[in-house]
Image (cartoon, rainbow, N blue to C red):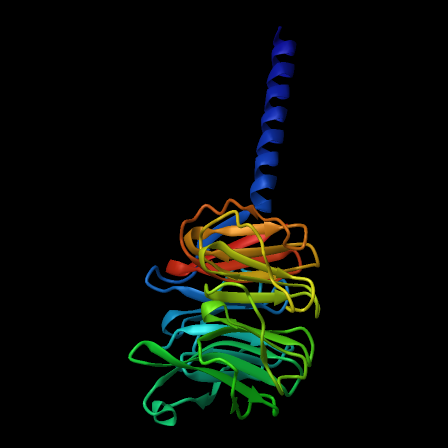
Length: 327
């Protein structure tokens, strides 16, 4: 009896350990949240160079860096009290950060950030500039989009260009005076801009000219991601998901699994991508955006930023929340 009792006990323990291991494995494969800023600060953007080194930026100039894959974070000093809206590195040394009406640059892997351009209201007849998105197509050529507003009303768009690695920026005219929110390039010549009232602009000549594409809607589009010069996904208000397979000549709506506003989208391969948005919404696709499945996140906080580095994903949002995903 004693021997049989010990065997039964051992079997139960082994089964319990197996179940716990299975639960842990499932948990490790999902989205796990933590908070790296105070509850009074929203995090707006996240960017990782690789699986180890990354940054998050948010309200009141909050900037934090990790060198160990997010196990620890160290706050960095940036001379601004404006919200950091975007962070982008064109290589391992040189990076760019935009906050409010100011462009910052780093040339030492993000150790120090230096202001290179601040757009003053007197340059725009007293109106205020807000910069949202920065991308580079080569070592020297880069773009920034945003808006010009007066008394909290958008009166014009802003499109900036540099051909000297971000040392100086010149304004280019876009064929839209509406708010421009995100810019994306797949190579030096092909790029897209999305924004308010269904705005989608495209270039095929490295930004020399921009043409309007028909999104077939008037909702704000917040983000766009292209895998190549043909296949792209755009997301926006009230669960808007648009898909193109011809470079944006035609955009087709995808029936959403949510009515929540989607604020960011990122693909890690031709078929696998994620989108995040308000109310803690995270959607996933495994068929190039044709269908989407809602993911469990454990949070109802708005999610603004999204970035994948190989098999590890990061989402950031309201009240300093940061979510990590391991495939």
